[in-house]
Amino acid sequence: MLLSISFVPVKQITSSVPRSNFSDKDIEHIANLVLKGEGIINPLILRSTSIESYEVVDGHFEYYAAARAREIDLRKGEMIGAFIIEPSNQESIEEQVKLLRNQKHHSDNKIINDNSNIYESHNINMESRITNIESRLTNLESRIEKRTDELQEEWRREIKSITNKINEIDSKLPKPIEPLDALNNLSISELTSKLKRANVSQKIIDSILKERKNGNFQSFGNTVKRVEGLGEKTMLKIIDSFTEGVI
Image (cartoon, rainbow, N blue to C red):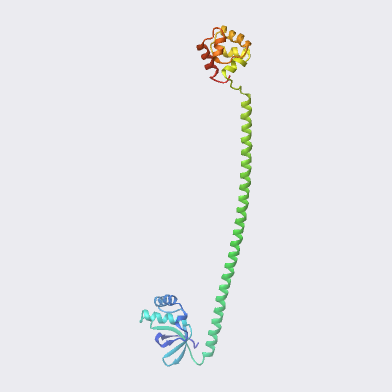
C-alpha cells in the first residue's frame, strides 16, 4: 500500500481550525498521554503545502495535543505520526476522511440517542416506582388510620364496660350512714349487732331501742340525755365505732 505512517516534525504542521475550538484541559491531558506513551494512537492526516510544511486535513485536536506535548518536552514531542496525502491519492483519502468523519458523527449521535433513550426509560421506570411507592404509602396510611380508629373505639367500649362494672359493684355496696342516722334508722337487728361490736352493754342497747320509739334522737347530746345509763364516754365509743367504716 502506498499509504503509510510518516514521522513529521510538529513545528512544520499548521491547522486551519482555531485552537479555541477545543478544551485546554482536554488538550493538556492528551498531550501528557502522548508523551507518556511516546506517540499518538490516532495519526494525523496531512497534505503537503510545501517541501517542509504540512496542513492538517483531519486530526486537528490531535495536532494541538501534539503541539502542546512539544511545548512540555521538546525532545519527546518533536515528531508526530501522520499519514501524508500525496497528489495521487488525495481525492480518495479526503473522501475517506469525509465518510469516516460522518460515520463517526452518526455513531456518536446514536450513542447519545441510545443513552438518552436509556435515561428516559430509566426516568419513566423511576417515576413508575415512585408512583407505586406513593400509592402503597397512601394505602398504608389509610390502613393505619382505620386501625387507629378501631383501637380507639375498642378503648372507648372497654372504658365504658369498666365504668359500668364499677357502678354495678358500687350499687351493691352498703352506703355510708352517719352515726345519728344509724341510731334512728337502722333495723333493730342491725343496730343491735353494730352496738355489740362497739362493746355497748345489752342494757344500754335495750334503752336505746326503747327510747327511739318515742321519736328520733335530735343530736348526740339529746341521745345521752334521753337514754338511761348512756354516758358521754360510751356515746363517743359508739360514734368512733360507727365512723370507722361502712355502716
